[in-house]
Length: 348
Image (cartoon, rainbow, N blue to C red; front, top):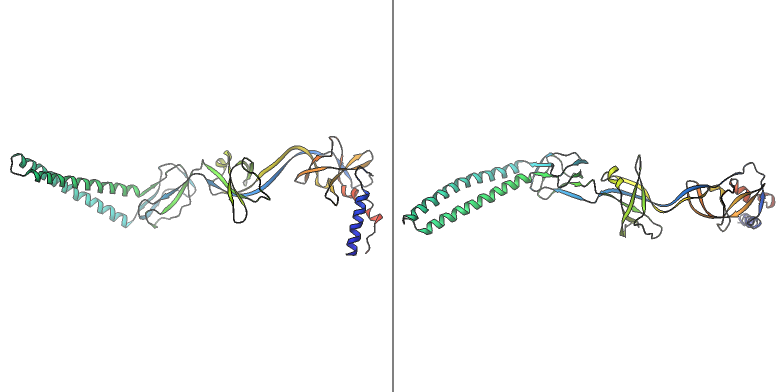
């Protein structure tokens, strides 16, 4: 503790000795000077998300049966009305056979009923058949015809239900069944997502509440970077405290696919073409005030500056420097602490 107290006291005295505006003679071969550069700085927040479709349609089995054919490959593009699944199996064949047999029987019954109506109408004309029998025969014929139509509709519906078609053009995805599998009516078989209506659903963790709608984001893939825009923010946070955002952009549906995982960053603030120095050019005192050393003849002047954003080893200089001034970019801390060991000796 004694050594630490002496060391901190020495630091305080040294900081007091190096006051703003003081010039320090150059005498170290390790000092390097250069002009400030201009760079772009961004304050960002990282994101992780997934490409999802704003329009997603489930493919549902319209009847019970066995999957006998799958006509599309997983994650492949499909067109509207394209047949994707075909159902069949013994139970389906049994239902089809039963309906066909019933239609055949009804055809014969209708033919007989039509003949009965014809004969009764003829008998009624010559007064040998009561008219009520004509009405009864006609009623029977109408009943048989209605039943025939109902069975025919049922057969048509069953046949149509054996083929599951794409309701929209898009990407065939999230298949849940395989060939040979028995399914019930209403079972979800797969999904078709609209590949032209994609967005990114992502989660970000913000240090404090910041408006995000309208801000741009940089999305990274294996081989390229894409631009997107925040178009929506969920009002509720995730259990881990994250904020869910939705991003759109023309480059998303051109380069990404539904279900693809992406990463990137949302740009919260951007400063373009501003003064910048390497990080080692800026030194800080005990109160975290920032200083640089500016070349002044054969000496160096310590000058206080206001810093801004930092990125890629550079720091933005908001104020304190003028264009054309040379700054120490290597050896700044050596100047800041020069003669420390000669004046203050720390006990062993």
